[in-house]
Length: 108
Ligand code: 2BA
Image 1 (tube, protein in one colour):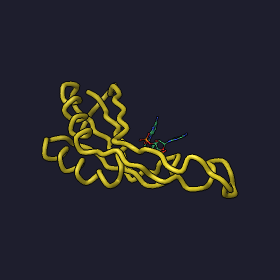
Image 2 (cartoon, rainbow, N blue to C red):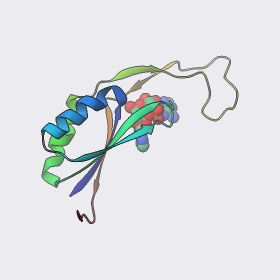
Image 3 (cartoon, helix red, strand yellow):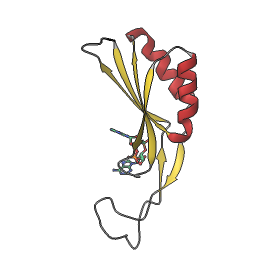
């Protein structure tokens, strides 16, 4: 068994959740915050059989878009705004996906 941790843009989360459910995947949806932009995104925890991982990743890929997002003019480590901040934009997504082995699973 594997655990897929997928970080998706909140605008894509609804569609991704719908297609995962329609295709029989069970998952948990978490409201999360990106460490860099400090804006909301959605993290999905999807526990599934090894042979279903590729299908789940394909569904996520098909329903997540790349987007350009502005970077707030505040340095991550600074307490005051920067006067001349660069870069002004970053590309976010489609999705960040991690696949890990599950050592033990039990539904009680
Ligand atoms: P954020 O941390 O808010 O990052 C948003 C986007 O900002 C990233 O998009 C990337 O293009 C850029 N970015 C992030 N850190 C940067 C840095 N130190 N310098 C310059 N640009 C930077 P994505 O790579 O698509 O990531 C989207 C979200 O996925 C991230 O939101 C974060 O919540 C998560 N994420 C990405 N990589 C991760 C990782 N290795 N581990 C855990 N979470 C990750």
